[in-house]
Image (cartoon, rainbow, N blue to C red; front, side, top):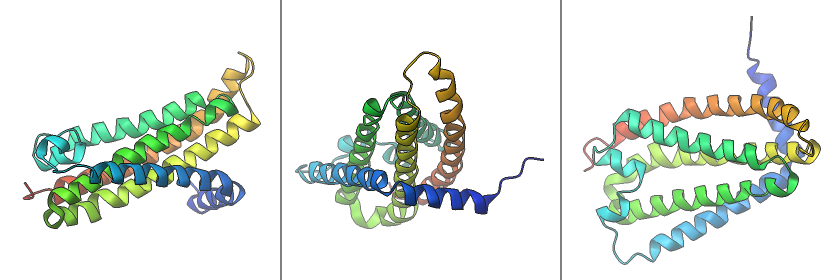
Length: 203
């Protein structure tokens, strides 16, 4: 019977983080840079209107233009696309650095939205942001930073130099991809439930 040893998994993850501190530091520096750019971009808005927020997934739930399934699907597919893109660029050490651009873009978009929402109506959206949005953004950053570090290590240790290397690379990265996707699936369902629940009565 297949059994998941949670303690061993957490221990392995902890050891991986300790062994790759520099990669995690770089990943979080990139996330901070994206956050600063996103916040500064939002503060440049002279006025925040519904039009400014209409392109964001959470706001569409608040205005009842997007359902539970709609929010979940968009959110999950976005994160899935992020880790898939990291897998694709991770075939070589040089291209693996492109994963940093995905982290930067994700951080920028997240903090732009969070800042705009607080500027729009800080009091009414406070519970939604503190309980339903921000904690899960932080979880997303951790998962993506972990996956970025893993793919970069794989690209460095086992780069795809020949066509014959593709099979080994896909098998190696595939297992972590599906585990990461499962983690994202679980927390996206929880996040979606909280966002839908906490958005009731805001708009």
